[in-house]
Image (cartoon, rainbow, N blue to C red; front, side, top):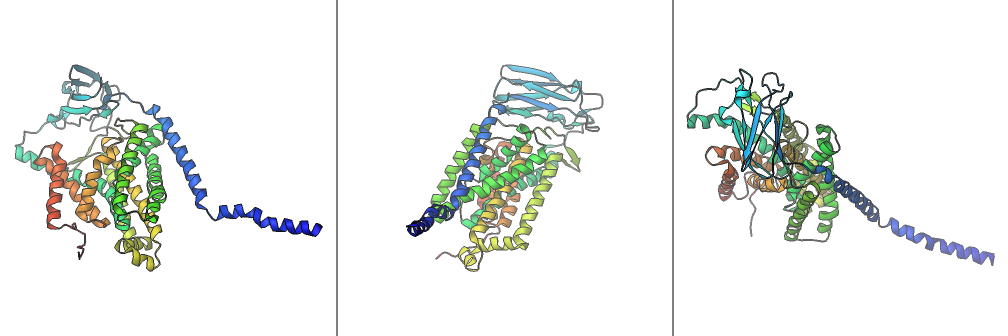
Length: 453
């Protein structure tokens, strides 16, 4: 009897162990639950900061001595709009602020008679500027000062020619912003053939996370940028691909259906950003309202110069990675022929995951550059998405090098077009050139012709 009981117990042991074995055979459940928990915690954290992001509508700025960089006190600034007029006087640090009644168009004027003797506007025509303000937005206004000795008025033609160096540099900086985002978009298309209309939200994610870590958490801006780019690469790259796009590829989802999914994802993320961060445009606490430095005929702020240098370094490192590293060569092989690459022993899914992480990180830093220049908003990614597509298509779909070249061309053309067309229409000129080039070379500048039939 004892023996039979012992035998029964032994027979029951494997049965009792089966649920544990079943759990081991499905390891994806563990990371999915863990990811769901982390994502829920992150979303809850973002929800709690929404009240802290409430902001008043207004204007601010700092008037500085161009020689010493110190603030100038007792300078009068006036803002006027429909039924509204308010003046402010700079404090001992040269700072001023004016609260606005709400959204609208306002004219901002600096009273040059209140400037110290020997100082005046670097450009006498920029003593008055017009801005569009929106509810909850605080805009920074800059009045560049000089020694007060205004040169003789130039002819209109000479004045336009003198703007070319400045506009060219501005175009290169803008082209770097576009290129950072376009490289990731092009690599994703090259390896998966996905046209991702949610790529603009990766741009916004980088800027919004930087604002969160710097202005809400209180980290130094440089550290906030590094953390935000890494988080963008993880959430917008690895997580997005693992949770969504990899699952769709495994189910054999068609390219058109995937494109529609990306459009829906873009809408969802945009309005999620709006819900959490609000509709106002915000400025980073650090490096706002910097005075420009003269480099020959070009005026550029230190933050734009440093951010552009970092952007060039990132683009250069990406190029080196594609050309010289084993992972980069594998990426090019997958983009050229996924089936052949897989047959050659390349882990295609691993390459695609790497591309998503790289593209999301670069797009995140692109958003940081936009935020440094013009502020952070929930809509910023969608606003530049068309230009990112333009740079990608102009250079050639699926080629990262073409995306870089096409983006620089688009950026420079946008800025130079303001010499002949109104500033409000500057994007039109670049897109017209895009159409003309594609009529001549449909595959793009560096794209390859494909045989049909």
